[in-house]
Image 1 (cartoon, helix red, strand yellow):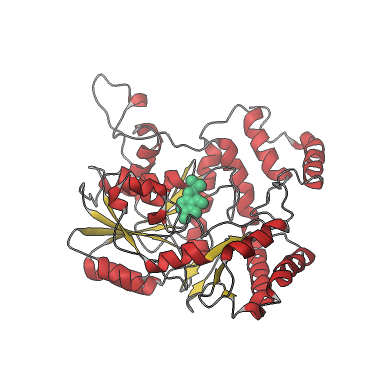
Image 2: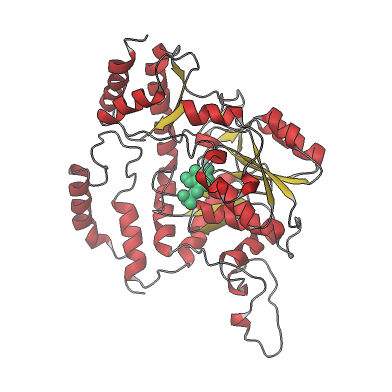
Length: 424
Ligand SMILES: Cc1ncc(COP(=O)(O)O)c(C=O)c1O
């Protein structure tokens, strides 16, 4: 392991490559000068990945362990499990809910309430685990689940709520936890867009059984692709570790070793499982990104606040989202909703933004119930979701870059100005 930590001599040439890539904007998709996301990593992350490759420690090893310790500490919980994506994090949580070795043991056909505006893998995970999904309407003011609809949809077969804190905006956790307690429901939180967000001073992801995170390129931290789960129950954490890697006993942390005649203890399978392990390259990358998280978060907040203030003069035409007084939003992007009284069509504004180099997109996947996939899975078709429809039809978002300079934020506002001023 001679190479471990001996990548220093590569710093200068790698930095030169990175500088060149930044100079020519190699990531920025053409023709956008203000894309949805930009690279937030630097030479330290690349050196960490190179270190893993040059020391032949590329598969899940001690850096993954260290990343998990840091990630758990960040959230004040005892357990973190790193995986290869946020979707895998959601998948493992859903499969842990139904696993015969799990403590909560939901039965096939038990119902889980889920948001109608979210990244669809949050919903697919629950379906794949054999549970029945019921989509809850979205509150267009917050982009999170409509809590009145959530309450109204709790029925006899409802066993769990899978929540999302969309765009980094925490749900009203006082009301959600009260509902869960009243009806004896399991709560899990998808925090894939909400790393760093808090409600009443408590990190999201720590209110229920488990929280999932994504470290995809555009997220609060990136490990290229990657994800994580946090929880406070050692048994659950070991079940998640089994599900992460083949059901293989080797990667558990708390379980007593099982001894069985005629079985090599190194090749013991205690459960079924996937293989959604991260690589050491991702974990090393993530350890460096975690050091920058505080700066990323405050810059994101500063830039989001600046942009929203600049756009406030168009408040009669469009608005951003409402944040609960007890919540600290960890801004993921800049979501905007055109008001119902707005005199122009969203498509005209989006065309203007795109033509002027500003990349736009729908709010996550819009109303998932309106995606073509629902024709294959009738369980996704249900009663109307008017709030989600409003988000689908009137919402869009633009990127939020932690390192965007004031001039580029002003230029961005200028692009909005040139379209909106005639309506203001
Ligand atoms: C709310 C939400 N859940 C889950 C995911 C899935 O994460 P990943 O892309 O890492 O699979 C995302 C991705 O952006 C997301 O926004």
